[in-house]
Length: 363
Length: 222
Image 1 (cartoon, rainbow over the protein chains, first blue to last red):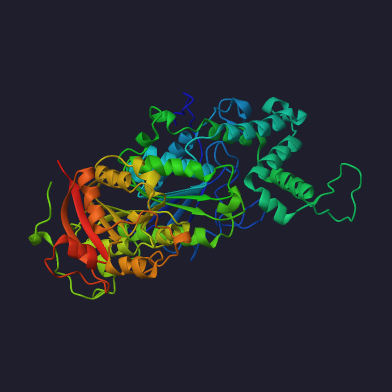
Image 2: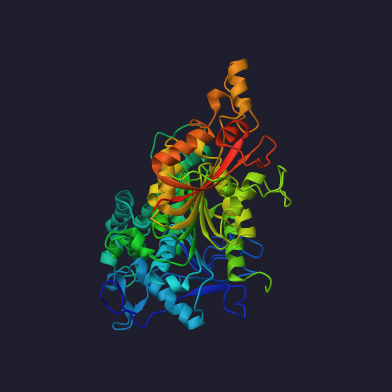
């Protein structure tokens, strides 16, 4: 595969999971694109954490993305660390882990690889492609790169470009990893070290951006952790500190530090308009797909204004678009959580699209 | 300018507030003005009743804009292509000639800039369909004249201080706006207080007095 960076990545491997059955017409395939730290285990138990799939409220039998009606495919993105080729994979030229010799990848590269997977699976056209955050970026890229292969698209809590603020947060995370002496210039796998502290701090910082002030206050307030009074030390006195430390530590168990560098970089580089002479509407020129754009009121990482810009571009391209903003105080992470209105909207959108696609009666 | 001849006045619908299928008569009238299979934008589409009616009876490719978040989310959950947006600010995002019909159903009086909205409608669409409550209706006039307060009717149920309706107009006013903007009035129907189309080939002053609401089909003057 030829990458945007101008180099060849081959051979490469994609790890993916499927759920449900492909119908005879091959018209019910749904591609789920995962977010920065997600993976292919969208609706099945994670092999490392033993936790439920990351979008089990959305995907599964009887769920809005109903695996009894649709054939769901969820691949691990290129550059990640759950089986798809990434910086922790072995470089065939050296026989050693790639590390920082792994080429920088883009959202478009991820989508290119997914298109090759679909070719391999014999799926010409997707009934829908859905995802939130970095997954939503892939959804938009799918619509722009392969308009004839996308019947409907569900970009959730995302944007057509990463804002300066978002790049800034990512840079803090990357610097935390690189500042960890265990990182060893990205060669930690060869030197049998692991930049756990750096990656944990990166995760802690990022995790704050996924929540909201209101959600943090509701969940933790200024409550102390297992103590009545402050200890006048730098222990995790506050519940919120303890929570973040736990988030950081548990993340390290399942994620590769270099993958975190590469995937955050891919998000930073994403700018769909820039690929189309700076005019976003051109990215969706004559797209036949129907879109359902969804944002959340308290998401300050990918605020509603970003979704509105997507909708404006789609309108300018005369695309068929629905757009809903959901009221919640749960911040960016709301797309992964129990939001009944989100489920009703996705279900309704897919039902309508399914009718137009001629799905339903047969499955 | 073109004035409507009496032959243009459509009085074909039967005289009940709800048509046979249970839909509102004013919506049925709008529906009958739309060609089959057309591409339609419903501005201020509420809970999507008109869009649903249009897609069921006219097989249109329908889109909607709605200001209220509840309305939008209800529409999207029904599978309708509706976005949250404001007629006053968001119509400028659409390219010229994107639609066959742009519909403003019972929303004109709630816009901040009715003239600009109308101009955008006829830029985006080849035709515009506008329905609105007639502020020249005799009941409205009577309330102001004899009761001395801002009128409240079935069509206009709000108190003056919390109404979304900030630009009331009469049928006469609306015709003047059409003239000012330079659009062609292809068809017009007035409905009486019971929701029935006025079946008389009446002069405009009569409509303006007895029509509780009106539906206009407009097109660009080329």
